Length: 504
Image (cartoon, rainbow, N blue to C red):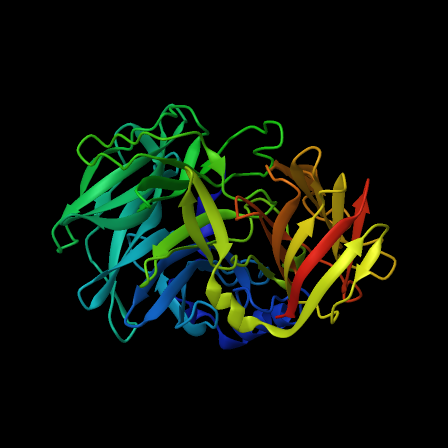
């Protein structure tokens, strides 16, 4: 049993209560890390996890993330948790807006958990889970969640709603009830939340508010899916409609590995099917698909951009993994934003077009690959690769990224034409971590002789989009400064690589 009394003893309500020298000391240590990203969102110190409140308001994109800035501070240990706020006009360059919602009321005193946001008239309405624990005389701590509302005005100032929107959870659920994702349908507002039933199975529940008041909500019901026993908890659900289809993203916990699937600690994926029946809450859908085939992807959240695109961002990490950055008192970053597209009952992911503004020093590649060949680049660490790989005359193709001079260190992508599969290995990527969860990830993909591969390489991460984006691999990697080269090899015949490389 966790000693809650000890855990809560050193909690603070606002980061402003922490002496400035302690904050600067942590930020200085984090800044010294050799793994700091160039174009991904990271915390200045501490722990970053779920993206929250992703929205477009007052002419800018707004993005918040779960924030525990002193998570790795040991002497003295200080626990503080909240939302951190960023704003952007282009989804690429982010303005630091500072702390947003903190754990400073009785409704959220033990954690300002995940939530979402929606524009109502001239304000941004935020809804999130306030985590609290109640104690009994027998020291039996019980989780009591509240769903909490807050308004952000045009000056980015927050005011919390005094009374909870929803108290406790549904009668058939445990205290695990959180992460409301809000949307509007007809004249009413709905929010979907992850939950755990008392039989320890995961599900999603829906709450509803009529009109624009947003202070009065009701427990509306359970989302009726085809899966009654699919993991023990569903986190971060997100329902939206795209191209005439209903889509539910969520992060089920407790799935057992099966063949090449469900290999991570926890998974994130989707159901896609018919539009939600708002009267019965029936959602008729197909099978569960993992959103990302890589190692580090969780807690996705989407928003609708002003031009109608559905944009997704996710935590580029997973709980219970000790990343090499913790040595520098920080952990976690967010993925690049991705556009979601529904095609043939499948969810495709593509890098947002705004990322093109990061490109510098274009280099063209047109090369026949047989034995191991170095692909000429500027050898900058942060790069974008946009390749078409024709292996119609070969059995398979190997692409080694962030490689050293003799190619003994690398992050390896293998495209197997005969097996119709792709494999990503970080076995030799650099600093080893999380090896008990495996060092390879594989996915089947149908293709003829050629395959499009679009890759984004940052200092300590790689994101690979294959085909139209039906397969995506995201992985944190921790190479050293000597790993700046790219090698390719064709097996069982020659391959032809054409495309472009940019520094980022």
